[in-house]
Amino acid sequence: MFDLELTEEQRLLEQSVREWAGREVAPRIRELDREHRFDPAILTQMADLGLLGMCVPREYGGAGMDYLSYGLACEETEYVDTSLRVILSVHLALNSLTVLTWGTEDQKRRYLVPQAQGRKIASYGLTEPGAGSDVRGMQSVAVRRGDRYVLTGEKMWISLADVADHFLVFAYSDLEKKQKRDVSGISAFLVERSFPGFSSGTLTEKWGILAGNTGYFKMDEVEVPEENMLGREGEGFKIAMFALDQGRLSVSAGATGLIRACRDASVAYARDRKTFGVPIGQHQLVKEMIAQMESDYQAARLLWMRSAWLKNEGRRSTRETGLAKWFATVASERAAGDAVQIHGANGYSDEYPVGRFYRNCKGAVIYEGTREIHKIMQADYALGYRVDKPTRCRLPAYREAVQA
Image 1 (cartoon, rainbow, N blue to C red):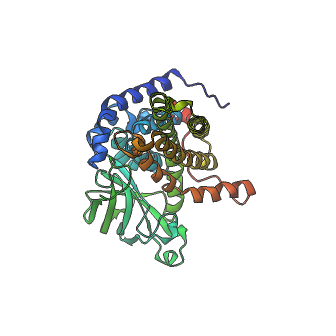
Image 2 (spheres, one colour; image 1 turned 120 degrees about the horizontal axis):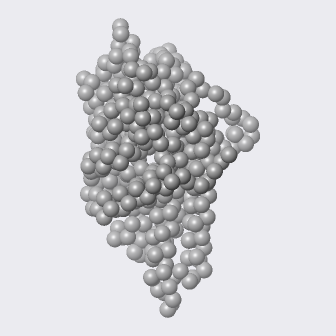
Image 3 (cartoon, rainbow, N blue to C red; image 1 turned 180 degrees about the vertical axis):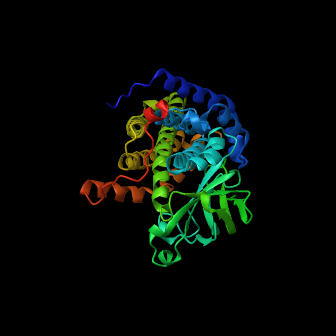
């Protein structure tokens, strides 16, 4: 049964993350954002809190928490700044949970354990300069040479590109299928920064999430041992979509936190700011915008919590998670725009946080499936054109992880 009541452990986690982010990051986030500076000390603090491996079973160095707890952490971190939630999305959801589900025991010991403990940072490399939503356009290739694969290509818009130690990378391992744009020719690999031929750089002209590290990496004939292939040859596309399914939970929960941040900032401002002799919160159209934020927040929270519950049960939730991501990110964009409007000219200044919220929210409407892609997906589900099939690997149910 879908139960909305949080456990004592979940409430404690929610409060702990809220207090940490409010105490350690909130007072200086404007400075970090202005300077376009990523603070690596944040990673250490998140590791100390157990956040970097929170959904990973204890036997692999994690905290053994459930996916509802993960969503709560994402909501609380993005309430302060999107850059914090992005760390959880990329390191834990896109990489570690995918290695947990698809990896061999050796891969879990070598990569998952140090990542869950926060000793190593992980990222995810799917997007390329000419391939985003159109994964078939991927140009990266992996050529088999003896007991190794040689990877060549470039990945773009990679979170933690200049920070991560480990990368989950996708490339065509079947060149004939690449010519046919057949995704069954794509494979997945675990690549280390230390591998010769690997290089990375930071994108310095982003519009938002300025306190986060976003960049690119290049592979110039990077030799990867065959035992670093994740899953089987040709399963890369399935693995990439599985990873995005986990990442979309974190994005939807994070966007929900951003809606709440916009609501709280708008309520505080509307109570204090006066026009025509009364607080602007007494004006009908301001009330309308705040009411929309409140309804969007409550709806978005229910959607991501439903998705997290399904993951706790070990059930596939591609449809539900996609809907949660689409709704929450579009609603966060609306909330941020209205928050700036409520603040008037002050909303156009970074003396108030709503301008930063507005810049940060747009990315989530694009990455991990654009709103247009998600609209098509949800229509196809409704029309019966799309039906999810069981995958070879599924996310372990939370109760199984606890028993283990």
